[in-house]
Length: 306
Image (cartoon, rainbow, N blue to C red; front, side, top):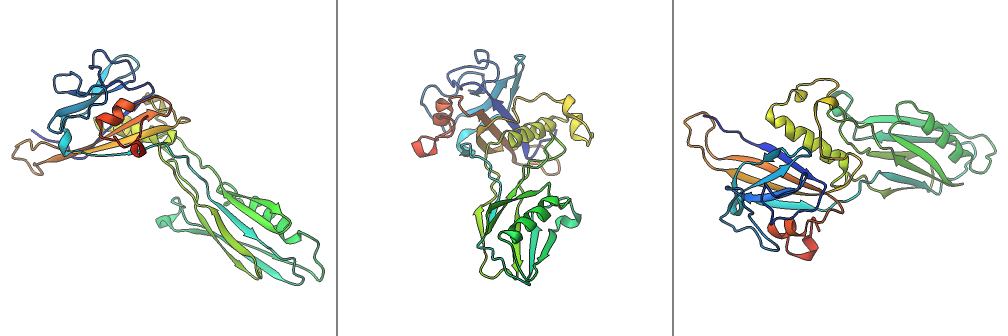
């Protein structure tokens, strides 16, 4: 009587894809795309026929089969991303002078902090005043020690002496646990006072990357919850309630199929065409040339799973 809007179906494979396989012939942990009757939707380098009604299927490690809803391939929007490594932010303070009788001030503003009220940024202030004479690298050494000792900041970034006149600030990998702490990247900005000609350079921009194992594990965890699993109800410790294919320490190539579903024709509130999202993640190194071809990634520059 009812339909489901915006359902999420996540398939994570660790073995090579072979789209000539039917569901019954497929290996465990192998993604296949099949017709409504379970036969192969594509073979070799053939692209799935535009008018074909297909579904994604996969066996788990025990041989149990899970499938997506049926959808028409010509109506689906398909996008893919090859694995790209996550990058932590690096900011460099260079040409720091040793100036006598000077009050130096550094403000570090953490801009990604989602744990404070209303997701406001959080600012930390460090200062150092020199005397009538200044030893070489005195300013650099003092600020590195201050920043690394600051309780609220030391879990977010680390300071290092790059030279006698420069400091690097590098974001730290954050705590992650399935269903409790998401995979986040630290971002911050730095402002200076009384540093003369010191330059502040964003040496490496923070980048969450794509296909990181922790992100794929979160997606798989969330997608399985669409079936009504109890671990999606705020249970504090839930890792023992779900078995994932995703390896949080692994890396993956990912494609996303966003597709409308047929109008169920039911006279209920919100009836009409629904949508679902189907995520295909394959461990890097597990060949998926046929999956590339079937989904239309035929240009070498767009190869996702090869």
